[in-house]
Length: 48
Ligand SMILES: [Zn+2]
Ligand SMILES: [Zn+2]
Image (cartoon, rainbow, N blue to C red; front, side, top):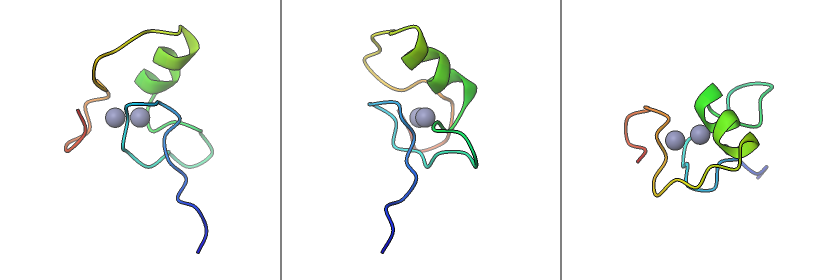
């Protein structure tokens, strides 16, 4: 079984979005800016 294309944000449990490595712009920015978050804040239900 192929690995699920998961969001690149360490604390995020969402699947990545299509051709992106992340589920959302929020996660991409957070990783890009090296933000240290205590929880994912992408806004997707079930992810915190
Ligand atoms: Zn998330
Ligand atoms: Zn994410």
